[in-house]
Image 1: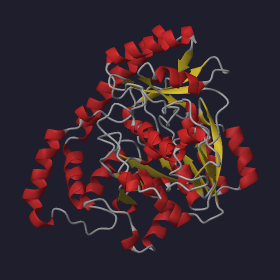
Image 2 (image 1 turned 135 degrees about the horizontal axis):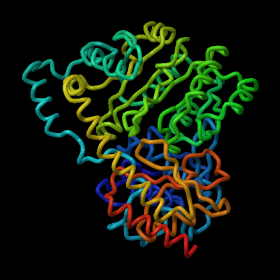
Image 3 (image 1 turned 120 degrees about the vertical axis):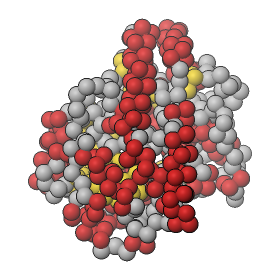
Length: 464
């Protein structure tokens, strides 16, 4: 029996957390501590046990699955394989790799250096001075009314009409999706999701006995021809979409695709959940309209989180409901709603009212310059081997390799041994994709590291 509480991950290490967890779990499997067909802890439970993001656990499980060390049963979980050969290498698990001076292109969180620490110190002091003993309380199940008023004004700048009474503060996107699933879906219902994706919401739906159908993405968003055909076959109740700088492809849906998606959802009575965590990191001049801002038939529920605005551990976001789902929420007992600490909400209220736009401009300027740097060095060093997606925003690029026969794990493993950490495309598919891609994040690397890293990648492909 494994005591997962005893598992120690080093957040200060240059080695990504998902690779650390993968090493530990593979060790348990190979030494027999985890027996064949043992069920691993569910993703969300493991993330809470280890105090890490669910992305870390999903990535570790996917790596183990790619090495046939574990297998997945839909709707049930992840299990240790029946027979595991002594492992001879592979992405992320080879021993003896010095990660001290590595260049981490797998990191896609906002740099801690950009967190407005001094501003929040003053804000939280102001909240304590103002509210004293009630600073930590929150009596409204939808969240602090003043914060919701501020968020209504924020989304109005994006042409989204919201009311204080149909906006709810939530800890995270997954908490929001889980609540919507509880309100609107039952076991056996069908949900459409994008492919590729982070797989987090996919696993959430599957864990509730919901059937998941993946719709492939093209340069314009969801492939509408496939979607139309799948609607006839499966009659979905919900579509989950990330129309702006989608993870991992960084794709932004075209206006034609957005309008077509809204049209078919209205005609077929399908609810759309729109996840938007990166539209504030758009570096172009053109306005990018959300599905919610275009929705005239009340088919879209809009979710936004601030993990890509502040820090990944600052767990706060919000949902803008449509009227039908808001009525279902009103019928649900308030004690079951996910809550965000009242002190955090009050601090966020003051920040959003006074400093939101300034911080947004700072992030856009800082990462907009890095975005241009990545494109320039990609053109200089990588143009012969791969091409990046370039939709004008986000914190990562999705590079398509020209040689479709290439073994993407071999590439990532070889580069890892040279101190270059990349995310291979199979992390984002339930099944291994036919065409190899690399996800290259630039949020926490310097311009010098970008050039040096791309130069090493170029040298590796020349020798491959």
